[in-house]
Image (cartoon, rainbow, N blue to C red):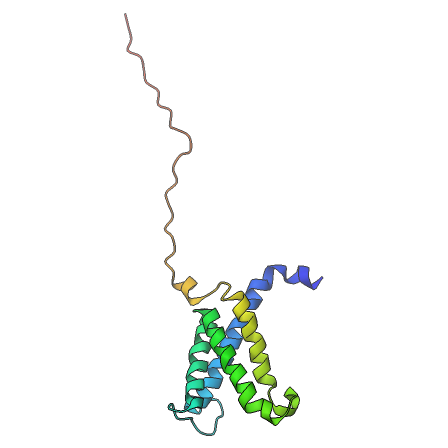
Length: 152
């Protein structure tokens, strides 16, 4: 039943999902690099966390706007695999134990984005020049009547 109710909205819901994931990933990168959104201090650009922050910002913007979505999702996927294996897994096996729930949620989101891509409503769609309407042409040839010269 839910399938029937959302059938026409699937594309719209996916775009909302894509934008939310992109904006949140952008916010994480901005938090690392610039100290925005509640971070205590920015990370230097010339560090591993600085590179991760740059990837998060660029990938987040690209995903939110639907630009090279699969490539950006792949970059995010690599970052999340690295984050989980280096920062979370050493603290314990289970995500709730090691604090890695968010990294795994992002990993799952990036797998979905890799599978489906931008799926419409991208910035490119809005900037694309709209085709100009073509004036209609008759489908049937126009009949012309010619008068025969009168013969006397």
